[in-house]
Image 1 (cartoon, rainbow, N blue to C red):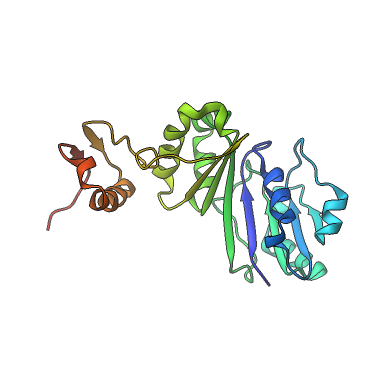
Image 2: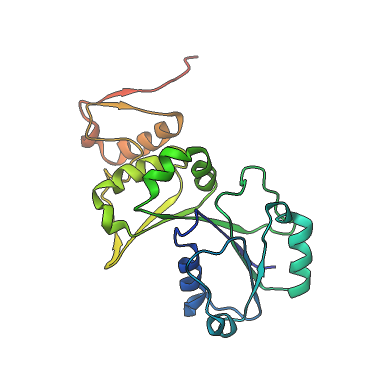
Length: 225
């Protein structure tokens, strides 16, 4: 079995848009079937011609309790795909999720709508954290509509998962944050309050950019031996 792409995020964040773009790319095409597990359906739908053209077969998983190793393995055996994509339901429990034993190469991607990110971060923080915690790539759509908030959003993400790659998409293309904006803390402040995860980021960044840290006070929890 080939790679498994696990796409998480809240309803209407852009998961379907991301997957449609992904399977449409020439560089993404493979011989054999792609099996798509669809765990929720928003406003965006999959075009039948696109699915046929990309040899993609859809299985709808309506109930959270059905998303288990035995059920998924049975559908995998039915289709015998070369690749699997999961469009997960962002409100289902990710924390205790058990994948089939044979799913070894799993790439997790979290999708957010930049215009509603703060709403979910304020009201569903624990759910959002589970979407982010294991993700290797995090994509923000409609980022140009809240350009002034992106640095704050990046720090929110990095506080949960410092190793994730962040991608910001706007109507006219990708938006790149500068070195300071990508940090999980505000480098412009005189005193830096660091979490355990932030400390490793600070060590790496301070070695590369010594001048940016001159005169700063750094507060963190440590243990002396």
